[in-house]
Image 1 (cartoon, one colour):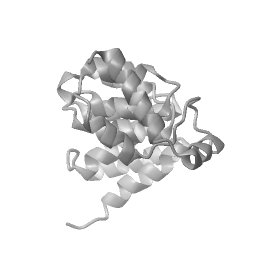
Image 2 (image 1 turned 60 degrees about the vertical axis):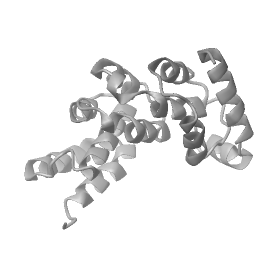
Image 3 (image 1 turned 60 degrees about the horizontal axis):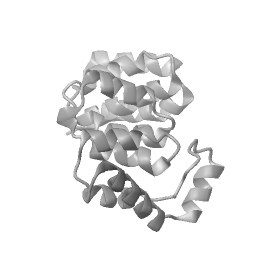
Length: 183
């Protein structure tokens, strides 16, 4: 099956899993995508499991910025070994909403050997969604013990929280809560 057939068949599967109630709710809550099937994350992951991961397929899905489910499945299909830092930064800076940022960070970016560098760079961005993505990635890395919970990191986060965009505030609070957890 060629890439076009994979894209077409996958979109048909999204349609089969569509959930009008979820789609309507997402639209009412400001989801920026013009095509929303309302698929749940588990449905998208199940569909992705049947597709051979490939950089080309993932990039084709990611390029479809109008389709929510295409943006969700792309990070699931991009082999982490094939992603370079420039592409990772480009994807992270082009995230259009929190849901896509969360999927991107959880399904792909946290697996990259340079993930901590990406998080740091994104946090310094002028764009609120890029900042959110940076903190979301940092949360993933802290939870995975890929970033050490140091006093200096805690102080940095407390300082950054003062000026961070509103949408990043709960993520920063979650990271700071991890400093209170005793293992």
